[in-house]
Length: 122
Image 1 (cartoon, rainbow, N blue to C red):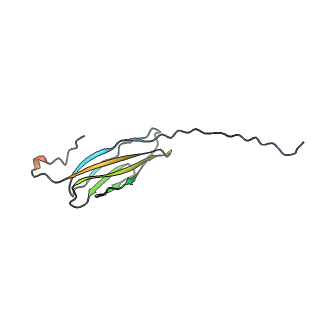
Image 2: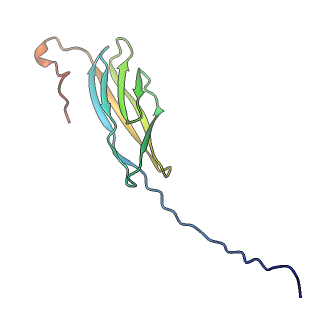
């Protein structure tokens, strides 16, 4: 008989499910040399906090994103065309999703009747 105690080894496999935040892509319009702002709308299925980080920066402008997913995009001087940036949204269980914001930068219209800088078209 042995004086060594017997230690039973149990292998426990854990199955944890990671739920990704839910978000979509967004389209915005602005005029050259004019910044535009918005918010990344997202839902966390686990009801925890979300973090927002820049995944892909815009190529023809600059963007700043805060901790709540609010952003401000400023096009490069005299740029007109389409630009975009992507935001990585992560929750506390390391679930993540990417939301892309597409921005159309237009020239100013020749008449103020066609200026729609204060309304959003969804």
